[in-house]
Image 1 (spheres, helix red, strand yellow):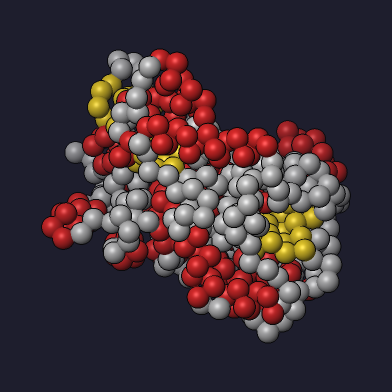
Image 2 (cartoon, rainbow, N blue to C red):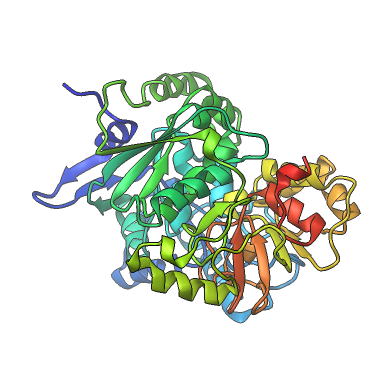
Length: 466
């Protein structure tokens, strides 16, 4: 009998029932909710007179709509205030733990799950948010769901799901100086396109992946959705176990020992078969930057924007439209291009290691006068750590302030919007037209590239300053 993949092992353990010729009924271990995709789901429960099946398996936090300054004041934007208040009401009614504004556990849903020990290997985890794939870094099946599915999980703690195909992407070898997890995932997407993993659950493997910290692994799984995948995952190992140990809601004692023994059985068997397998060399990856309007339009920072004639016919029209929006021309270099904003944060790169890397890079230097910088911690815990470690002091000395936690400028749902026509080097996950504000132009990059750009005021290869 052929060996099983990490995905197979978790999926099979969570199937409650199979619909003949249709989807499976999947049991959900952890349901994360926030203020944007839950109000209608709760309204649906109310209309049907249904209670939340397992409030103890559900955790809530407001993150998308919250401001990142003056969080002690009432939220100014009416819709945002309504949604945040509604989440509080719904959680109180259904006895769901919620970490609201100013709570020491508040933060972006995909940052607080791991840091509180709510995210663990072997779990099924869902949230009404596409970047739920982040939690797959722990060796779990984690994916985003729609509002009607949020209602289904609240009502039953189960979900109807068709089984996806499996893909393994190996990154082998040693990463070069200045190359980060963000560069790895932007490189993969540039190679396989934003649709290259459609229909698959992707396991990331190989020596370069194993060398990453948990925070780096979360960055990679976070953006697996940007290559069209249903989710991404990385097999748990000693790095994973060490990260989960001793956190607020992590198991202890005999239960901890029992679970760790189970987690060690999860990695894909040596003879496991994947529906598709790809391998890339770590040595081929340099710091990456996007030039277009989807995460697949990325190049190594020393490279030039592609020429129209080098693309297949089907891509040429959308490529030209994208460059028109960005105000760029084919065959131009990216280094030296003007930038107006630098944003460090989001569920992709708003963790303490990201803030540390950014602060260490800019220490003793000053930001360029033409740059407006927003550095936004992913949670209250990250904010506290950044203050205690002196990161805030380094930022302030460079002319940058540390804002309060939230999704911030990742998406234009709160006050932090990039103005029309302005360029932002962003450590977030999406660069679609208007993603960071109507008419905003987004260049996705790592915290190191963002730091180099902050200092020089133009796109800069961070390796020239390391």
